[in-house]
Length: 152
Image 1 (cartoon, one colour):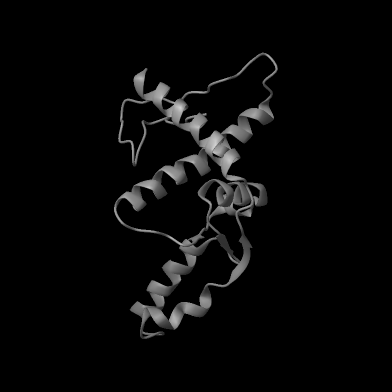
Image 2 (cartoon, rainbow, N blue to C red; image 1 turned 180 degrees about the horizontal axis):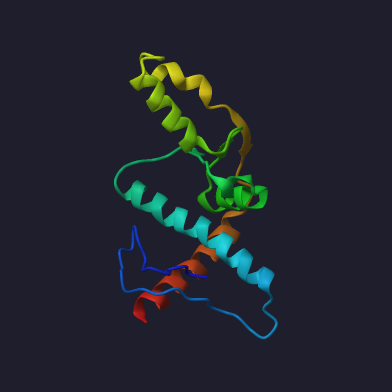
């Protein structure tokens, strides 16, 4: 599944691309579509990571937040596809923590961003466990899907 429902953003930047689902058959079930949608998150993250690497940035880990991060399967799949450790915080809505930190800074309850470092606490690390061969095979399928989506 290429979820280009409003075009493809970074790093493809194709506003006219549309979402597509490839490889479905009459045996495709709703859970297959759900899994494909979740897998696309990992593949899109991989594309962004590759763009960062092309710009000379080499991440050693990825810290995640938001509602999707409570899905252990997804976090492990992302770690496997990116071949990077994924760190999930104990409190997954870190955007709210960021807003609170800004309010605390503005009201002078804390004097510097460094004073908020203890607000983020790791709950779990997902370490890559997928073979290089399997990762390469999956990413080749994603690249083919992207290519087909961009051509149509």
